[in-house]
Length: 410
Image (cartoon, rainbow, N blue to C red; front, side):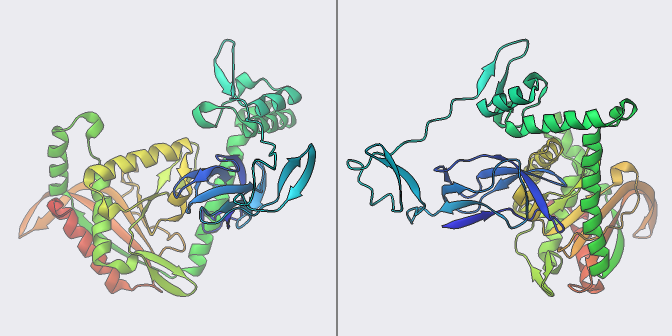
């Protein structure tokens, strides 16, 4: 038997709301399956399971806000029978019997099977949509028109959590003056929660991590010429962005200087073999999320471009997985597309490094005694002085620069 608990999805996450269960008792699950959906300060996250077995018991109901570490469900290993109490019917009487499935004798014990829930109902009208029976019943009780609700379940199904949210929004609108309704209280509260989460993490970072900063300039002329030539051979959907070259160069440099890839936990430097790069993504409604792109060093340029595009789309659609929020071993942030020349980042604990990229600008550049106009990138490193020092940081930036100037090495 194993306990499935509310995971920590950020350095300063205290609690989250369980929005939806994706499984029910008796379901078989395997590593990587999505078992639940929760809502934290940084958005809605799909929670993965990291073991194989059968869902034995759901403990926390949908809609409840619980602290990190709270047991949400019990999972039975496939190698051991479940020993939970079950209700049995023998000759019309209900009794409790604690025994394993292997000991039951079907011909002597009549087991009352749970009724199979009906499929979500498709309501007819001006618009076709799906709503679960429980959600429909709750909507009727609360006098809420389900046609005004956006479903968050699979295939857009409206579930109970969607109806409860609609009810809360209606109550908020009643309390807010007419002149204030246009401010969208839900969005304002979401942004406030996001800012609180970021503030807590960054305050901890500045308080606990002794930062050191290094900066270098990189001639990106040859890399961009290669990129432009490569994109001419591709369709618009297959074209590459400069960011994939930056991410790949960071991953290769971390292989050369592994001390910057990992965590500082319990007063100890813990280096990691896997390179999962946290990529800072801004949200349209405001705020910032830094989900991880897994195993960047093992991906080809095309695979990395596909992974980055998919991650950005899912982040802005609110469909991130828990592993993407917790696995990052280093962070990369790029603000060059907004015209920022140099980025001085703040390390996200417990990581020990952050790489910042600014704008690629045309400027005079001397090389081999010749002066010309080159396309130059400003790159910075913020690192934890407890884990590494300036010498290691300089080695990392030098290695990253070599890879960006020789794209064939990527």
